[in-house]
Length: 209
Ligand code: AMP
Image (cartoon, rainbow, N blue to C red; front, side):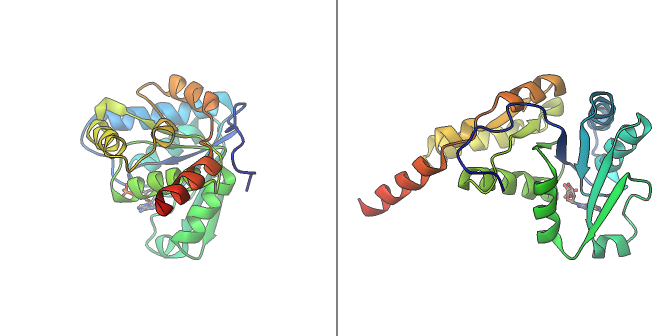
């Protein structure tokens, strides 16, 4: 793990972990965005780290990256391999014991994280990456690719959490958001990690008032 409270990558994002649906979703724009992301990563030489599935948007992004000659690394728990949803043609597949190991390894292998449309699994992974950033367990940028406004309601809720003072403005601001992948990657590269020390001090102060 990197030292807390240093700026996030601010340089090349050489490996990016994506969180996205194991379903394709309704709107074709979701599949198009996942395919474009895969192709773009291949073109730019960004290694794609993901959950290792062959299904849904996960499979679309992985296939597009591989077809473009890119590198795709999967991290999948044994249970999902047994259910035969693992991708069979990745550059490399890490088979791990459980979901905790999977998340930890995905975090280690990536320089940043992007959520695309998805369900509980995607949201769980996105919020864990944000929570770990908030606490200083990693200092890597986290972004949302807001395809076709999929995340609009969630982003409003996050604003509400900030307005109601459950989320500090600096942590609210640590999430990069864009509808355009190139712009999102630029924002992530420029992102600064929140100051963990201040956050912890603030909490200690509040608890003693
Ligand atoms: P969901 O958004 O609920 O479809 O879950 C997708 C996220 O959870 C992905 O980013 C994966 O890491 C993980 N996941 C859920 N289902 C699968 C699956 N069938 N194969 C591999 N990973 C999965």
